[in-house]
Image (cartoon, rainbow, N blue to C red):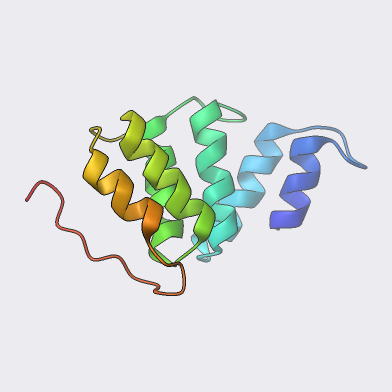
Length: 112
């Protein structure tokens, strides 16, 4: 589903279709496919195939980061650095940026 979604997103071998891309990424993301979660977050962040919504983008980036997906961790670090979909927090940006993806869990108490 992820690979097919990427083909529809880029228009490689098929007609470019962002709505279909979102549908495919959504199916895979709901099955906890971490890269699909990152890609779906990107679609929300850029408003491709869906209305632009950084709050939803961060939800998907966080899901991926909680599985140790490097791209999810990086996207969360950038979100906290820039205040995109979250309140800017340089400490949390740093925590996500340096987190070892092999350690699958990040235990954070936000706002504490």
